[in-house]
Image: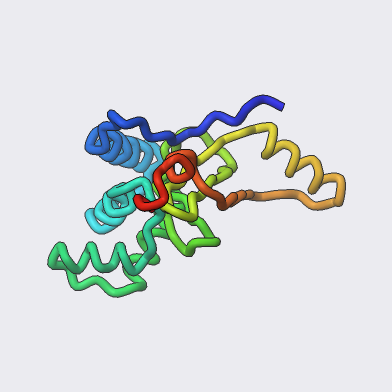
Length: 167
């Protein structure tokens, strides 16, 4: 089996502002091309999701909106997140009840996510062999997949190599 390549792997010289700006440019282009409406509220929710490379919960997003001076309610956040998920701009991580930005929204894919239980960093994989194996195994059982998300929890290399006092 081919080695899975991470879609999102942060280097020490990672330009976070640049990656957030790229995500926002992609979102504007994708919404324009698909005839979707990227409202100011949806855009701000997406920015809050991309604020870090760690999963963010809906109530953290709500807090961010309220800190902006908006008087948002939970349904507002959940509607915006639903739109962003449907537009393939955000992934929901069920095990964490949280959301991460999709670094490659142009290409339909089934995500496999490595979730560090120590630092909560998420690495998204897009390994077609894993996806194909799941689909073929399911088909062998008479099951047709419509979507798949695989969440794997463990400890990232950075946390494993960090001195215990830093953890």
